[in-house]
Image 1 (cartoon, rainbow, N blue to C red):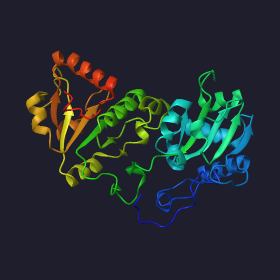
Image 2 (image 1 turned 90 degrees about the horizontal axis):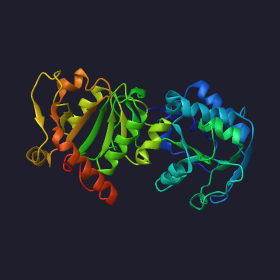
Image 3 (image 1 turned 30 degrees about the horizontal axis):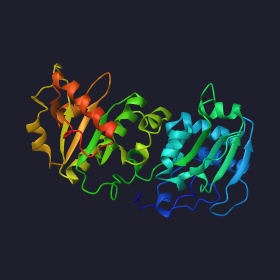
Length: 340
C-alpha cells in the first residue's frame, strides 16, 4: 500500500461508475497489458451511464461470450489474474451478505440470476446490478446447477492483503500490524478448504493476522473463500517468503513456534508438549505459530527456525470439545494457545 512509486493507471475494474479510486490503493496496482485490455473490453460491454449513490444500474447479460463473463471466469480460475487485477469473485448469496457487513463499497458488480430480487441488505449497493441467464450463472460460478447459486459479486481484494512477492520495493507492512501479539503462519497448506478454515479459526480467536509462506494455495480461491466465511475479508493476510517473515518477527520481537507431531522423527531438537505451564509462559509474549502442510508437514526452514511444540494425543479430544463449545456460544475471546 505504501509504495514509493509513480501513480499507476486507474483500477483495472473501472466497471462501476460509482467507484472512486483510492489514491493509496492505486499506487499498488501493477496490471499486465493483457489484463488491462480484458477489463477495458468488459467495461465497454457492460457499463451504463453513471448514477447516484443509491441508484443501482441494471444490465442484462444472457450470453456466455460476453466479455464481462469471460473476465469473471478468469477471476475464478486464475490466482495470477486475481492479483494482477486486485479483484476476486465471491460466489453465493450467503458469503456476499457476510462480506457486506464489512465492505459493501468493495463490490464492483453484483450478478443476480434472472428473476431474483436484489436482497434488502444490498439495496444501498451503488454499483452495477447485472441480471444473468442460468447459462451465464453456471459458467461464472463453475456449478452444474444454479439452484443454490443466485448471486455472484466481483469485488476488490481486501486492503489488508499484501503479496510481498509482487512488490519490487521490498516489505510493505507498515500500517498493517500494530505490534501484533499472535500471527498464524501457514507453511505449504495445499487444500483450499483447510486454508479457509484455518483463516476462519485465526479470526475467531482474534489473532492479528495470517502469514502464508510459499507453496500455500491462494486464500482467494473460491473454496478457500467459502471455508473462511468472510474471515479473509476481515483479517490481515500476508503472502511472502521466509526472508519477509524473519523481518516481520525481528521488527516485533516475536517468538517462533511450530506445531509438530509427537511421534515424528524428523526433528533434530527437543519438542515441547503443550501444557498449562507452557501456555502461561507464552501468555504475554508475541508469538508466531507455524503449521505445516497436510502431506509433508513442516519444511526444513521451519524446523530450523522454530521451537517445536506438540499436543499430546490424549488431550486432543478435550481440545476439540473446548473449541466446539466456544464456537457454539460465539465466545471467541481466547487465543488458540490459551484455549488449550
